[in-house]
Figure 1 (spheres, protein in one colour):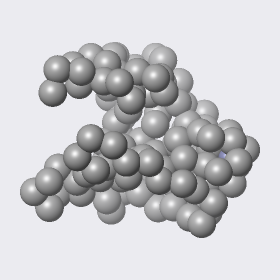
Figure 2 (cartoon, rainbow, N blue to C red):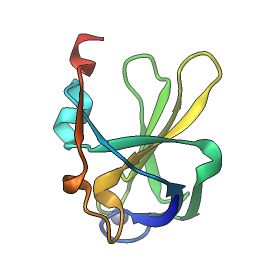
Figure 3 (cartoon, protein in one colour):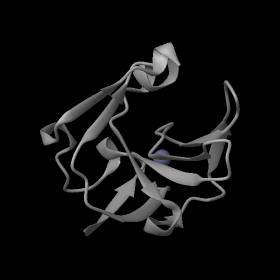
Length: 116
Ligand SMILES: [Zn+2]
């Protein structure tokens, strides 16, 4: 396990996440594909938002189970928060937004979100 710093592009939104990332999820749904996400899910306890809580807009679509939160200034979505509809909540980390972390070097796991 290691603690990483994540941020949007302009730096208003900053967070820390502690995890051992072993693969990057690449989803082909209409939303993930447009944003080019490489994602990993972490438990709620592993994530701490350090700044930018009030500088974000939250986008919802489909079943509205996931808060897609992006920076009002630079538009980057560095993480998401959501549930599975059964009361289980997770953070989804946009691995491309972590500092000093080579997200492209991870094994890719393709997720067929478009078919869900
Ligand atoms: Zn920003």
